[in-house]
Image: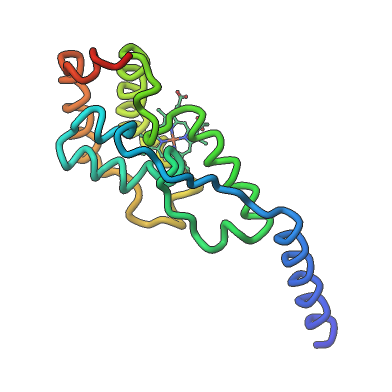
Length: 157
Ligand code: HEC
């Protein structure tokens, strides 16, 4: 019994020290709403909702950070996901994209949803409800297919 108590105490101390040394900075700087995906492309509500539900946590500066993201070593994994996710596609800064890149990101996103590659498998058990159903993915892709003609995309710099 003593051993177990010692073991638990050691684990708690390691987690505490780790969390104090590695203070995550999620950089949730107040986004400029005018630069974001919704303001730039004016998607239908269902498309906007799908992305907010499944993608914003990693692909924007408007995500919700879970409590365990502040506990080392989970904090390292969450920070990596967010850093990489934003590098590939930042929904809060859509105005940075050229029309071509904007279309490519949409087509990639459609593919990722259809193939159930995003949100990543490791993320889904902790976020039940984050995955896109086949119908939701189809609806998103149907909208993406209309986007070649979206004047808002052509107007991106
Ligand atoms: C848990 C965080 C997380 C969530 C949630 C998430 N992504 Fe990602 N996404 C990443 C990371 C990390 C990468 C880069 C590494 C990789 O491809 O696995 C990425 C890469 C991508 C890429 C580029 C892939 C490529 O190879 O070209 C696209 C497109 C993408 N995500 C779309 C989405 C969409 C759409 C959603 C919502 C349905 C979503 N992601 C949800 C973390 C996430």
